[in-house]
Length: 377
Image (cartoon, rainbow, N blue to C red; front, side, top):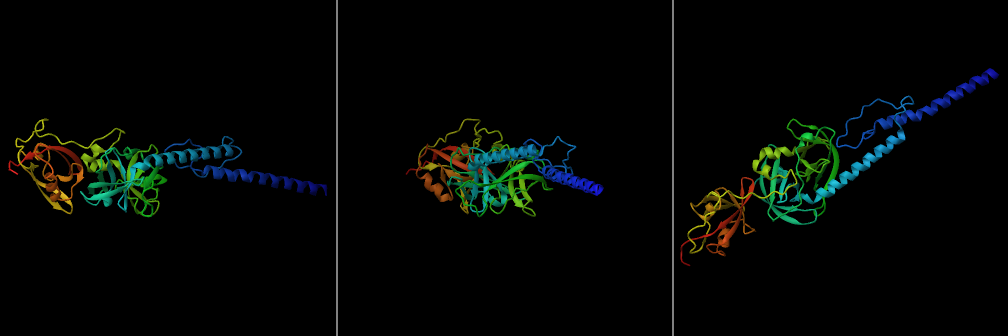
C-alpha cells in the first residue's frame, strides 16, 4: 500500500512539472514570431528566422523585456509615421477628381502618373489639403514608364517634399503611401498608409504592400526620412501587389524636369530663357504705332502654340521660340489667340510684357519689351 501511494505521488509531481513548462514554450514561440522583436527600431525590418523556441536553457531572452522592446518599437514607428504624414500632407494634392500628385519644389512642380496627366498642355485643377484649388498645366507624360508632371500656374512658394533616389529601398524597407482615393473627400489631408517594400519588378517598378486604389495614382511613396522615393502607378495582382514608379525614372524621362526636382531642400526657380544677344536684351527700334509682339500662333483645344517668330521681333529678342505654348500673359491665363490680340490692345510700344511659355515640358518666363507697328492710330 505504501509503495502504491509513493508511486502515485511521483506521477503527480511529474504531471505538475510538465504543466509548469508548457506556458514558457508557447510564449517563446509567440515572441520569436514578432517581426519587431529583439531589434532596435530601423527603417528596415528583416525577416525573422522561424522554428527557434525559447527554453529554460536559453535565459538570455526575457519574454517581458522583449514585449516591452517590441511595444516601444511600434510606438516609435507610429509616432514617426504620423509626423511624416502630417509634414508631407500640405504638398500632397488631388488632381481633378481621379488622381493625386506631390509637389517637389517651391515653385509648384508636381510629379504624378502619366495616366493622370494624359497629354501635355492640358489645364487641370489641383486641390490642396486646406481646400485651396489652384490651376495647373500638364507638362507631358511617358506612357511606357507611366511618368507625368504638372506645373502650378499661380506664383509660389508652395509647400513641397524633397526627392530621393529609390536605390536604398530594399525588400523589408518601411515606406508610406499617400494619396486621395476616389471615395476620399477633397479639401482635407491625404490618406496615409504604412507598409514595406516587397521587391522590384522586371520593369524596374517598386512593389509594396502599401495598399493603393483608384484615385491614389500619382501620389507619393515616402521613406522614413520623409523623402519621395516613388510615385503610385497601379495595382498588379492584389492588394499586396502595388506598383510604384521609382523617382529616378522621372529624371531619365525628362532632363529639363530633372533640373527642377528638389533633392536638397533648396529653392528652385522656373528657368529663364537665354538671351539671343550675348546677355544684353535687345529693344526694338520702333516704338511707334500699336503694340507689336511678333509671333504667328494657332489655337487648338484651348492651347495656343507659336508657329513662327518674326525676325528681329520683340518675341525673338526675348528668347521666345516656335512651338512654345503660351500659358500666360502678365499672369493672365491664355487659351486662345484672340486673347493675345485683345491683351496687346491694352498695351503700347515700349511696355514690358511678362510671358510664360511651356517649352517641351519646362515652364519658361520671358520679359518682352513690346515694339511698335509704325502705323498711325
